[in-house]
Structure formats: structure tokens, C-alpha cells
Length: 219
Image 1 (cartoon, rainbow, N blue to C red):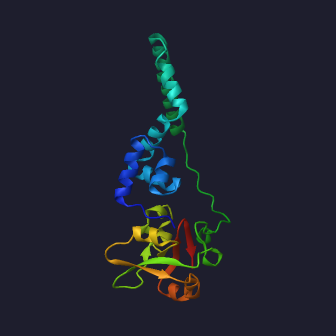
Image 2 (cartoon, rainbow, N blue to C red):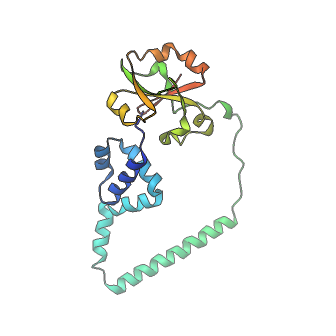
Image 3 (cartoon, one colour):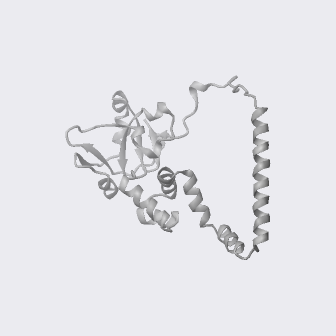
């Protein structure tokens, strides 16, 4: 399961990106995967701003910008007029398309919408867990599950999945401590098979998922 990105880390990640660091460098500094960094940047900055900053750093953009300095003013005017003309044509085509648009009903024949395959999680039986794992539990309540919607990195899941109860486990003590709050304590699970052995008990408590690093495990 990926580490949870704190609000402070989100702010620092976005500042680092704006100040010139690329995704790979930020990933190495904060010890998150590149996919996680990109996802957080899009959340904080928005898709449009992220793409705008990212495009400005591409070699092609810099080359075009440098070359544009050597273009005579009259050529720039012609180029600008061409862009304006192209925009007018595109807007005309868009309006024409909108005027002739008609809705097509979705094809649902012979499709079982109620029993779609869950491709975001895999069975706990198939998971390769280390012998020893770690958990964060409430100091007063030994086992306090959370909902998947409490984890931003899984926010893309359907509403039904987001309302599933889950517990999170860690492969090493250091990464677990980073996410430990004052009202929590870290416990060591010396045998990770305990989750498989007690899976029926966990399900009876409404817990159907385990988050481990980048994986979502189904009980």
C-alpha cells in the first residue's frame, strides 16, 4: 500500500514541482512512486496547470520558444492570423457538430452491469506478504477499520467500493511510524498469515479489504 501523503507533503511536492524539480527527482526526495507524485500534483495544481508546467519543460517547447525569437514581426503577425483563422474554423465545426448532435442510448444488451469483475483488487490468497508486517491501531480500540474513501489514492474507485471497510498494513516499521498519530500505536504482526486465518472474523466485522503498499487485497 502506498504511504498516505500528508497535507504538508502535498504542499511541498507542488512547490518543488513549480520551482523546477521534475517528477522523478521529487519521487526520490519524498520516497513516493512517480504515479503518486503525478496524482497529487494534479489534485493540488489541477490537470490544466500541471500539464501547462510540464509542457513548458519539454525540449520541443523550449526549442519552439527560442526559434520564435528569431522570427520577423511580419511573420509573427501572419502566424497569429493563421491561429485566429484556425480557431474560427474549429469553433464553426464545433457549433455545427453541436447542432447536429443526437444522443445514442447506451448498449446494455447482454451485459451484466451488476456483476462486473473487480480489477482493482486481488485475493489475499494470491498476495505475497512478508512474514512480519506492522499495523497502526487506536490506543483505546485495538482494531479500528477505516473506509476506502479515507484514502485519497483510491478515490477513483466506484462509490460502493469506497464505502468498504478496510485495514492497512505495512512491510516495515519506519514507513508505518511516519503515519502514526498521537491517538494511535504501532503493533508488530509476527505472522502475516493471521489475516488469512482470521479472514472470516474480519468479514463478520464488515472488513473486506486490506491495503498493502500499492495493492488492494480482497478478503
